[in-house]
Amino acid sequence: MERVLSGFYRILAGVLGALFLALTIFAVFYTVVFRQWEENDYPDFTRLPVIATLFVLIVLAFALRLFVRRFGKNGEGAKCTASGILIPERGIVLSLAAVCFFGIFLLYVIRGLPTNDARELDRIMGEFLAGDYHAMESGYLTIYPFQLSYCLAGQGLAVLFGAGSYLPYQILNLLSVLLTFFFLYETAWELTEDLRVCRVMPLMIAGCLMLTVYCTFIYNDIWSLAPLFGAFWLMIRFLKQGGMLRGTAAAVLAALSFCIKSNGSIALIAMAMMLAVCVIREFIAGDRSRAVRGLAVAVMMILFSVGMRVGVNAYYTAKSGLPVPGGVPAAAYFAMGMEETDGKCGWYNGMNARFILDADGDSDAAAHAAAAHIRERGSYLLHHPREMIRFYGKKFFSQWGDPTKVSLREQELTGRHQEGKRPALAGDLTYGTGYHILQGGMHLYHLLLCFFSAAELFALCFQKRRIDEKTVLILLFVFGGMVFHQIWEASGRYTLRYELAMMPIAAAGAVRYLAGAGKSEKRKEGYEREK
Image 1 (tube, rainbow, N blue to C red):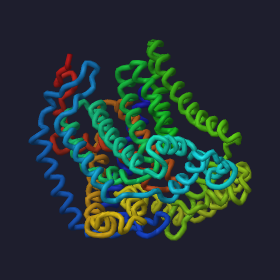
Image 2: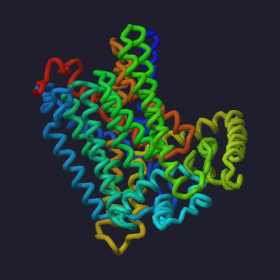
Image 3: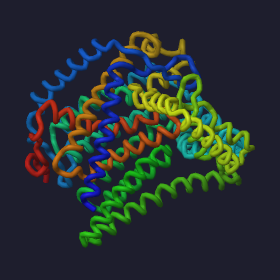
Image 4: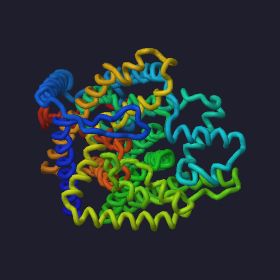
């Protein structure tokens, strides 16, 4: 079993390394830029000046090398609590403070409003607060009933802060961003036990503008990130040290992230797979008590995930006296993910909603129609292999090669109707010099992250010792996201969470190749426990 697992882990790291190397090469020649003043996302590939890009990349890598060698040459002095949690150093505190300052600055300048789905849901929430639940019978929620969890959260914010008050949504975004970065910092320590990696993380956090810009976005994507990465951090600690409290907390947070945003299902699958491996190993080794604890955490995670969704649906059924609609079937998203519209490969074009509308709300009939469309489109692509390679290649690079993760496009959209009501600087950040600086900065950050991720993944693939499960958990999550979004609806906004998960891996790669391999100070050798 161990040999099979070791081989699988190496293949996984090697395949991911090849994919991130492809993204690195793509980012040297191209970037993804979104058209402005559009209602939907329209990504375009823009050619870059290769010599200038490589020159800036080399300068940044050299500066990072100086930083790693001068300030992070030793792993000594790491301080942890009695339970092994790394006590934050000054660097991460300053980095989070900078993120907080920039986030507040953007909230003041952009002054965003709800757009598209969020705007429609805002109207529905107002009706729900007034006791009118006819939206459960017709309209948006009959197509997308999974948005009821967002409605419940929005109603709670409206009760606390008043209807039409959107600053609380954005403050929650900022809090989620800060917590996400903190959890990633702690995850870097758990994965590597190398203080130098944790000293590189503040630089990566400060440079991660693609997430910080999302503070202005009024929707639930960003809310789901803090519980997601909190769950990863606690799950890794559970895999390393056990403890039912850690495992239960990880299960609760993973379920909460899934309830807020269903994209969290990939994380649930990755965690369940790693728990299954550990349960089988402990059972074979004869440690049945630890195997039972791992199984209990997996069961709790599934029950909490299902229970939260069922609870939200039961609440609205009780309030409205109406059943929750079936909504768009998954097959409709897969069908939409195979379509090209105006040069967009697999991006949203409204096809998923058309299936359910044409079927008069019958989810089963919509699923059959979508399945037939998948067979027809699939047959065409199989008989035209060049077209299939072009289509899926463009789909892959348009979402994974997007350095902004649609953040600048969403910032433009959310503040579009606020012209004349906000500072002039907002226009510069949205359409002028500030926009181009942000786009360029995000691209260089994305290029470095992909390069160091690829380097670390290849190192893991070819190292002598086996890759441990805590690292494989992250790799499974990212690889699962890559596969899923090749067949599901494409969007850089959906791939954001996977690129964030690679930050500790990229930081480890930077330390490995810029500071020299084999010099990391392990927890048992170089930290002091605080009693």
